[in-house]
Length: 201
Image: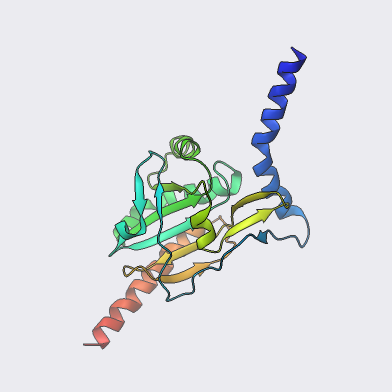
């Protein structure tokens, strides 16, 4: 029985490690997650291509969203407090994003099964993609090492324009109210793009 209890305890601790890494990385004064690899694409440059599975196992690629504005947000870990706040903020503004013709896509290094549970628990009506091998997170320059051991995505968001270019990059965002900020900026970017096209006629 002691052996079974010890095994359960080890499994529970292993499940808590990512959340602990996030918490300590935030609390330790002056500590910042270390960049694992890669450089974020600059504003105006093409967004790195990807092909990943969503919470239902369906494949998605960046090319699928050609012609649409995309709010592509990276987050560290499913069902942790900050990531839940951020996801629920996007969920609560889904109709406003739809009205603007904008798509919300989340990415973390969690597995498909974890995404499915997270999406169902919080009724998330948008796509979250599983970057289990961390290649896409790395290509966007947001793969970070927390506490020297855990590699997860930093909380960054990219607005991608209908031509597939990076229109705006938010680094290490505050999850509280972030969806409203992204929505407002998409509206402003759309208005600027429309004004530019009229001026070019």
